[in-house]
Image 1: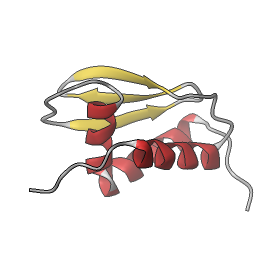
Image 2: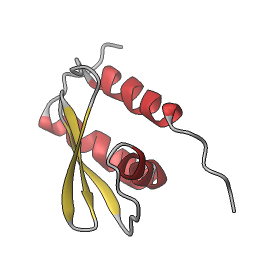
Image 3: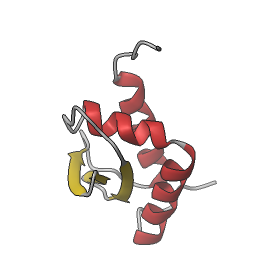
Length: 92
């Protein structure tokens, strides 16, 4: 099945999935890639070819990708790779 172009509708679908099913990953992106030490609330609001936009504690945060995303499958693979590249956090 071919991947979808990265349209506004596809961005909204990715964001809804991330916020509903992977909220801890969104917080991890804000901390690791956004440099935000303390995160009360974080949600993904857009995925564009060049960056993801998060809303972190009421402020907008742009996190650039290391390449220009080509489609929804590239977005998926890139978000997963970014998460896997983070150091493992100790569990408490």
